[in-house]
Length: 340
Image 1: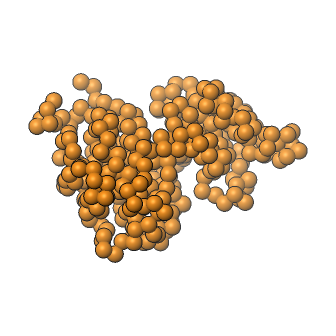
Image 2: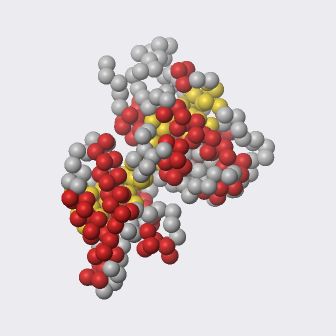
Image 3: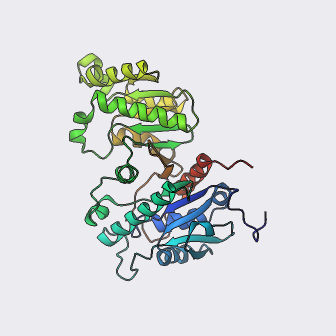
């Protein structure tokens, strides 16, 4: 294959939603597309605003050429070219970089909606999402607490969960964007069991035939026999037992201060954490820049960066694209290559 004779079938086509234009999404997108390894994994197509991407491109001095296209069929292998399905929905002159705004929130959701439609229609093989800001999308009238809930709504997914990963170290969560004071109210047998099932089935779809699912405790020392809380006895333990009855290799509850060490050493294929920080902290300490997320339970394949919009460093040219590179590479790997 030469650059003058691109093959639209040699690699999977991956739609990359640009994220909140006021945040680091445009920068990490351009930064990732400047990496040769990304183009070896897939045919990337950015869903975003070409003018904003051009500004990010100039900021980074990447030397890439931003090329607008009108349809997915025009995506091809062109070294140095970034193909963009341009929604032209951001005004650079009124966009407040590094700040929450309804304009940016609305644009970010429109990128996601377009990417999902392309995936549902089979025009792209997977989607990768740059970060959005929850306040911004809510200001724009989209009342979701994150990407996962929005994607579940757009795809009519009955149950899904976001898995953080770096290498073979993986974590899913029973609760994510829930105030800590309310976490224990959500730790029910039903919620835990559904998360275990969604996690196990998701890993099977990713090629792990018999996933070993470690389940974390909520309380210190796994509740110490009820002295430090009864969730392990009344909710988590019964959920693990029922998962076993369904044929899932679920184990626990295990104390949270040791289960992640055991997982990192290879004892589990994934850990089900009870709440956001319980699962996020070990992954990010393990490999902050190289970690990424995969949403399990969706009818489409979606990966994402493992960080937020980082308004404090946005549009300064210092944001690392490593998580975006990892997310795109994984999407390309999971989408697979069509048979010859």
